[in-house]
Every structure is written in structure tokens, then in C-alpha cells.
Length: 584
Image (tube, rainbow, N blue to C red):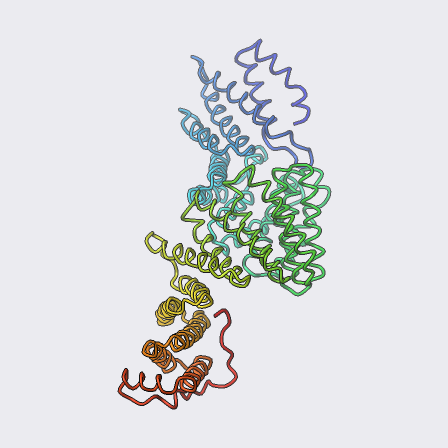
């Protein structure tokens, strides 16, 4: 390719002298420069290849438009359009790539070889994936894989793609659709084919091998298969060695950043915290090198690498170092948001939430609240652009902010954030994606806790009672196990709120209202075997009678027609040693 590139002025001169044969020679030379060559020969910049592809398409279009055009000229025009689409995908102009692929299909009378048709499908899948249309990309990717399975590539067609490359794209699309297990299976088949290739065959798909191994490692991490991920990750690390880094730095260095991050998570999950931290530090160093060369690509990856390193430092309880990493990640996100708020506001929000968690662990409540407020503001901006996707995240962040404000003593702020969280959580029930009742129940408990601490006992009781009702319905359905702890927390919170409501009514001289609250507490005690609730009930009745013996007993008799109970504990085989759930 290098020699042809140097000699391009000669076929250009021939095209001016001989409109027929000269143009065909120029078109062939340009196509040769566009097509991928031997991997160890550093390819020219994508934009230069795009310019050559556009020139080749113009040459073949002129040949096909002549009065005495040969059928071969139309074949070459269709082929040049496919290569033009290939270069458009390289530079990220995927909408134009789809248009050019449609134009290639529409060339009248053009003959398509099987390898060219397979490449056409492959590029269509990649272009649709680049346009964030994974559903459409999946159809083309499936057709592309099927086409390459039927294909026996000749030496002449080896630049037109391979089955491993098609499988890698197919796996990438499946991963974007959250079909992780299928994605991992496709990656494993791809890697298996690459391992079986001869050295000569593998030399043409080295970059596919590097990408597939790194992405397979990530898929195995998502699946929780950490030991397998470590094994594949070590192979990926060897494949993305310094030689490949020099040959294709713009491809390999970002892969190395993600790979080191995945390996650090695997090592942490398998208990090797020291190695996990060292690998995370390698990821940060690699990301900083990438930022020096390509800031647009490097800064988002540096944010992810810093987040991974902060997690590892947190596991080692190095709070100051963790805070430094998280602050740097937030600062980097701020610069990204200034450039692309539509893309990076959600990332800034997540980084602010994790910084708030870091401050909370260190006991810095005021700093935690400030970070939580920044997270909510970023989520709110993101929700303005994509309500359906971002509002659930905003609701979650508001619930977390309510807890932070409550711990910091800001009762009104805690109640306000919790109310908005509940309102946002209820809203999706009106759309085509109803909120899970368990999520709504959790947000109601957050609001109930804030209201109880603010002294609004009646509203708190209502929140906890609704939370209990939602979770009882969930427990009655399939898969009830995951909700048992949440239901216990709701009932514990309800018992506490009813106790406090009864005490407040008695203190204000409203004995009849206190009886109503105590009767609700007694009813709760009799429908659950939860010892923390039983203990709360015993304490409430004992204290109430001791402090207000005359007014309470007479009010109880008027309301129920019975004597004030002297025994309210429900005997249960599960009593003893149970601690009341936290967060109430």
C-alpha cells in the first residue's frame, strides 16, 4: 500500500490522458490505498482514506455514466461505494455510511460477489450500531454472520472481512442490548476461531483478536465469571503488547485502559486487593497517556479509570486517597459537561454520587450533602433531555439526597427531596414502563423516615403503611424472597411511627387519637412474627399506661368496649435476638 500511495500522482496523470483505461488504473490504485493492509504497516489516517474513497467513487461514477460503459464499470462503482462506506464508518459518519450503502445496493446491473455482499452487511451493522440503533444493527449482524459462515474466502477477498470480525460485531451488538450471555458466547466463538488460525492468517486479523479478547474479558466480568475473565484478560494483555501499541495506538491504548480496569475489578472480586489496586493504577497511568495524545477519547476513559482506582482505595480504607481520585473524576466530568452536556451530565451525576458516598464514609456530612446536590442537579439536566431514561435515576438520587440531608439535620430539605423522589417514582406507572412496587415502597420508607424525624407522625404512618401494603402484594407473587427484608423494614418503621404518633397524641391531651394509633400498632403486632415489632408494641403499651393511666384506660374502654390490654405480645417461635431493621 505504501508504494502505491507514493506513486498515486502517476495514475492521476494517466486518468487525465486516458479517460477509460487511465481512470480504471486510478480507481484501482485508490481502492488499494483505502482497503486495509498488513497490520504491521501503519495505516494512513482515516480522513485521508476517506478522501481517497471519495475520489475513487467519483472516478468509477464517471466511468459508469459513460455512453459505452462496460458492465464491469458498474461492478466497480458498487464496490467503490462499499469502500466509501467503510471509510465513513472509520471516521464515525454513520448516517452518511448508511446512505452510501443504500446507493451501492441501487447501482443498476452491478454484480456482487459473496464476499462483497457479506462486507456490505457487516458495514451496515456497524453503521447502525454507531447510530445507537442496536435493534436494527442486530438484524444486519445476524445476516452478516450467516453470510460469512457460507463463504470460503479466497486470497483476493481477504480484505473484505472474515467470520471472526463479523462475530465480534455481532457480540458487540448483543452486549449493547444487555444480552450478555449470548454476547459472551459469540465472543468465545470468535476467539476460538482466531486461536485456530495459522500465523499467516492471524497476521491479517490481529486487531480483531485484540478487540475481541478485551471485550470478552469485559463480558465475563459483567457475567460474574471472574476467574475466566482473569484468564482471558491475561491473554488480552499479551495481545495488546507494546508492539501493537506502537502499530495502532489509537485502537490499542483505549482497549488497554478498559482492560486494566476490568482486570482490577476481577482481582478485587477474587480477593487480591493489592494486585487490584496496582492494576487500577496502571489503568489510570494508561488513561493519562491517552489524554496527552487524544483528549476527546482519553478524558472519559480517565474518569472511568479513576473511579475504578477509587473503589480499590476505598476497599483498602484509604479514604483520603479515594477522595482525591473521586474529586479529580468530578472535575474532569465538569469539563466534559461544558463541551457535551447531552452526553456527559449523567456521568457527572454518577461521579458526584460516589463522591458523596466517599464523604459519608469519612464522616464529612456537609461535603456529602453538597456532592449529593450536585448529583441531583446533573441528573435533573439529563432528565430534561431524556425523561424516560433519566427520571428513574433522578428519583434514586433524590432519595439518597434525602438521607444525606436527614443525617446532616436538614429536616425540611430531607422531606422535600423525598417527596419529589416518591412523585417521580409514581409517575412511570402512567407510562408504558410501570415502576416496580418494591422500588416505590423503598422510596416511601425514605419519605416516612424524614417525616417521622420532622414530627409529622400521621403522614409518616401513612407512608410506612402504604409501603407495607405494596410489599405484601409483592410477597404474594412469584419470587417473594427478595422482598422479605424490605417488608421487615417497612413494618419496623411503621411500628416506630405508630408508637411515636401515640406518644405525641398523649402529650397533647388527645387520648382518643392515641388509642387509634395504639390499636393500629396492636393490629400490626398480631399480623407479623417480627420480634422487633412485638417489642416496640410492648414498650408502647407499657409506657403509655404508666404515664397516662387514667385518661388512656378510659379512652380505650370507650373506643373498644374492653379493658385496656395487659398482654400484647404475640408468642412466636422466631422470637429472641432479632434486631430491628435499620433505616427507620
